[in-house]
Length: 306
Image 1: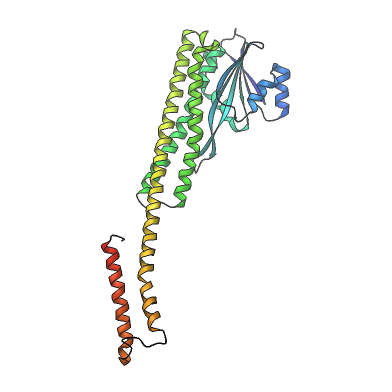
Image 2: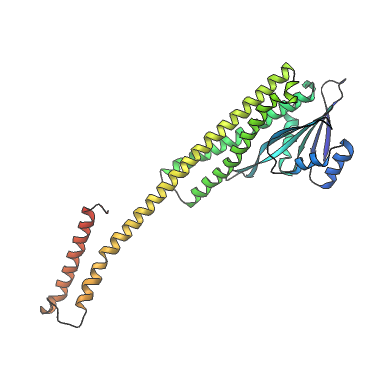
């Protein structure tokens, strides 16, 4: 699917080409109509492509790849990141997405005021700023879920909370890598042919994009650190609870061993002490058993085993 929109003033021949690559037909249309190469199309469809800038002097094109958040499960706050490609080629600026990032073109269409954009560089830089800002919402939702789990830690954490915490850690692992690479790409643009030919106005827009990219990177890193600390605390609490349970079971297994030992002795078919007292012999046996049990329990308590 390919959509063209004119940008800038009426006398400017500048176009924004929005496309979503879903099939070989989409790839073929881009090759035939706009002369895009297989190498560029490979960058577009590679879901593992990291954020970077590339210039092709032969084709006089500049490629920008950045990552955006993608929702996997809104309820459990599970996110991943996927690349979005911008391509500057002559008077054309391409925003190329896949099925999982198709919302990017819709968002940019709603947010960009095309009649107030005067060149393709400006559209690219404003678009980058908007997309860097898209990490803020998911990070705030992750922070709200993290606060809930932190409160749950003071009550009774269970397996459901551990799974929720694991989902947050997975999402933040994607976010930390993506926002860091986005920030590095944006910072390094100043030293590229693209950055060196920017006007003063566009240089300010690049500075804004760099600030936004760094902010999202720092927010994500802080959130990831907090979630990791909560996870370690969860593990410590669960380990302590397990230790207390094992200690309780061990102590009572020792105490309850005493009746087995005493009754085992008096169950043997041999002459034993205290067996000549008629009907009270079993009471004496029970008293000895209880006495030894109490003595063992007091000894364990004295040695701080419980």
